[in-house]
Amino acid sequence: MGTGRGELRTGPLALPGPDEVRVATLWSGISRGTETLVFRGRVPESEWPRMRCPFQAGEFPHPVKYGYAAVGRVEAGPPDLLGRTVFCLHPHQDRFVVPADAVLPLPDGLPPRRAVLAANMETAVNALWDSPVLPGQRVAVVGAGVVGLLVARLAAAVPGSVVTLVDRDPGKAAVAAALGAGFADVGGAPRGCDAVFEATGAPDGLVTALDLAGDEAVVTVLSWFGSSPVALPLGGAFHARRLTLRSSQVGQVAPAQRRRWSHRRRLALALELLRDPALDALVTGESDFADLPRTMERLSGPPDGTLCHAVRYP
Image (cartoon, rainbow, N blue to C red; front, side, top):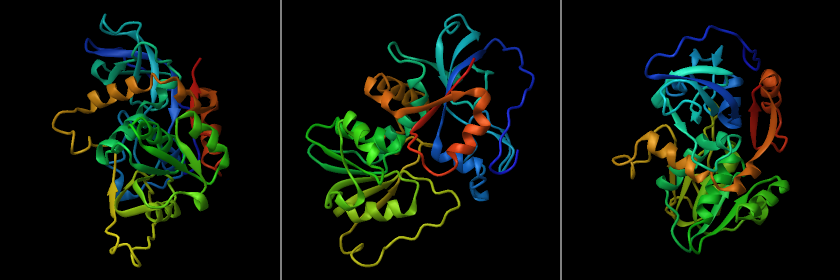
């Protein structure tokens, strides 16, 4: 459809070939940051090729079939996959046919609904590979959305680390506690941190992240701002404190791991890490596939406290 509008469309489904699978979707997840930017037509033209998701249909700015967090059951395909529940980086769709090597079976003990967090967990893993957290470090994660919460969970598992989630919404404090992290609003956030991760999606969040960093610390930027300009206070003490701004982006495996890790191996790790029951706290919304156009309109509006929104299929 057009900017800020969506609809469900029907289309033919090809028969799977000998090296393909047909998947009946059980759940898909909405990546609120990236998908709402796509929904609102805020992908810069320079990024159209890089922002294509696997199995996308259509071209930016619209109409496009988008999304990358589908969990379903294999209805047809190779015997070793038949009947198994799998994850696939695929747009929201009730059934789809893809190459067999595009799906990964869920590990034992991972509920399909929680598995929609896999792409977000990949992003969090890549962030910790880009900027490792060391034992005993004080860490601030600015932005308690899904990616920020997952980064905090991973960082809090490092021995001796002290992790604080920083967010304007006091309702996120309970989720932070469930994940083993502290919580502070912007005014009460700790300064002088050894490592800072920014995951707000808002330019002023990056300003806050710079303010919380200690001397010679790294501020790792996970937000993608689309076409929004970002103004930063790089005068003042920025140079004297020798701060480093580092981008982290899930499209490529972090350089420190790239020689040994494929995208598939990293995704398999993300699925294993999702066996953590505490992460159910991140899936806070749910609606039917039939309601997806209206759901996207709502999620593209003002924040309402929803973290990951799960879409269920009949």
